Length: 570
Image 1: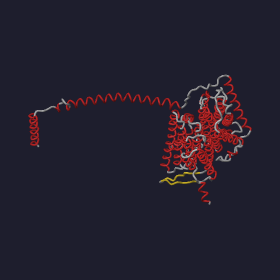
Image 2: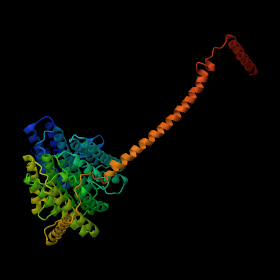
Image 3: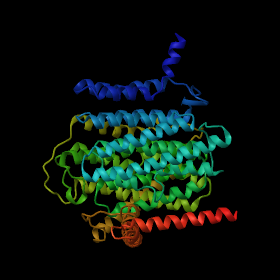
Image 4: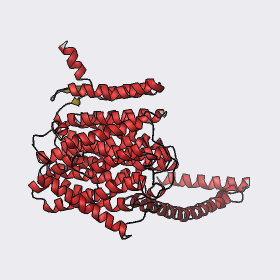
């Protein structure tokens, strides 16, 4: 009995999702819905039964792979991804699109497989499946925009995988060890892996696959996308590069610069994509600090981000599903027709803004406190600015322009029940974790006791929020707030969608001109050579003429005479 129970708890958590994806491809209706929901429920139960220290090995040729490793860090993300998968699947149950269901299940399962991978090669396999399946969630929109955005998205995923594989092979060649533990930046191989993780973390100038791809996905596909890829990268960075100081400065920049683009962005799902990069910045800063408190704050904020960012993406997905619109300039006044969705969106907005009694407050404050503990006052000030910016572009802009501003008299209604239920679960968890932080703190991987609800933390945050709200009101009242203009804003995407294509087109023109010039030179040389041949071998050439028989005999005699003379001389 014990051996059987041990075998059950050692079942790889990817398998339920793989089996469910296969069955979902051949079933329909209620049966398919039940199979899909069963995958995260069964997998989550297995993970809850798993014990820290559990390892499952697999021998492949000369490699001993650790395909399943359980410790406190992987368990946290295991719980998170099963919870996120359940919410995402529930939100998408109304769909009859087999492609999205199969891709979503494999995508969630591969993220879970990645966080339980104990070696770099196993991580690479799930890393690639993660990238491939997520691209299909963008292509599932089946229009020209999603096709091109999906291609650009997939190129970044492939680049990340190539860098990871290159670094893993390099480490294996030099050390013979492929286990996935702390790596650090001590070699060229480690830099390759660092950049592989950085791409999926949304590092500056490598982030546009988020702002380009996510808004092009389907209303449900974007909810899946926001939950897994970047959080799997945060897990990988926390395991491989904790305490890497450069991450503090990278994360601070990530937290600040998206604010400026989010303020002027018209597509509300793209606003949320910028907001995601902003929140990832807080997590990256925590990993860079590297203390137990900071790491708990980073991974705890990743846990909360799946819930509150998922809630906001679900509310905008519901609006898009009902109205077919996602631009701020095209929306407004929906609070009358969609009061439940409006309320749930406001809960998500208050959570991401880190209001006390909401979940982001109890995790973000850990990172902020760790910054002060380590003496990073300048970065702390930058992160305060980033926190205020979050309130403006996600806490106020999203619900205001979607549900209240410039009433467009849009005919709408509440989305299907499954979508409302998924949003309600996320909203309840946002409030529950914020009101009772022990729900989250008890599963954090590092021993660092922390109490967010002291007078200093609460007053500081409330003052920050109050002045941020005052600033937004002032800008609106004085007419200085940027108008919602129907346009496409490009940041680092300009390099990939404007400059590089222009360079490519220029190179094609140069090659074409050189090819034409070279072709003319070749044609001239070839013509000259053929002309010479024609003079000798052409119809009127010397060698083509008819020679008299007597002349031929004369020449034969001359040659024979010369041969005899040479023979005699010798």
